[in-house]
Image (cartoon, rainbow, N blue to C red; front, side, top):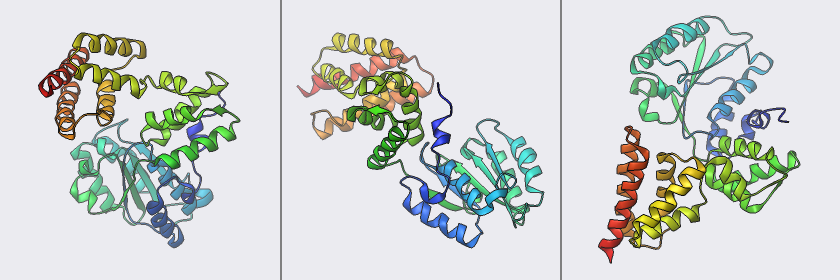
Length: 319
């Protein structure tokens, strides 16, 4: 029986404990030491420590009063102008408890509309005496320039493979679990630098069996082992469209994969094919085109089979 969520259980309590973000950690330590900070913009992929950094920073600056002086909101839950005018304003206009300022943490700020961001900019200006804002986003380019210019920018990178492996081993040892080396490799492959995803996969796998291996991880993640995808692409490039199509349909149905899942794995494995670099460039361009079609709402199966046909055509052209 799962008694706690491991993402929360193993979330670092201090800034210094944050995984594989050395430059970010050093800069945040300076703010903690001075007991002051500017408005901040955290930018980077999911699962790289942005939320953890904000919470750890608040805990170290405010200590026992951190919950009273820290407001966390998620812009993707309630998009629009009302977020800024309501929750943020009511929190920002009150005095901090045993501190000169409070912190408002707005996660996924790039999900806010431009109107909401403009309203937030005005709120930031109005309450600079009582509040500091920490904005978190995946893409800093989606944050309007007037907000960016008012924030210190911190860029988070995907968690490196060695740091990911070290963290996975620490958790498995702490939970007295058994995991194979290829199981660790599968988690690293599937999570793609997202430590939160890696920990969630690990916890999901822990209730499925005593020993966690590669097969279990790929089944839980609804992903296909990379060599299977590579084999399908090689068959397509050899000119056997029907065989490649049949194999692809099998893995999509058995693993519950979406078109975007398949395109993502195609993109990763095309670089591992034994083909000239010029061919890889052409095929990556095609993958990008069909990925865009899928994001626009096209039929998954039709688009994936059409992309597979492009591999067949390219293989025939290169003969």
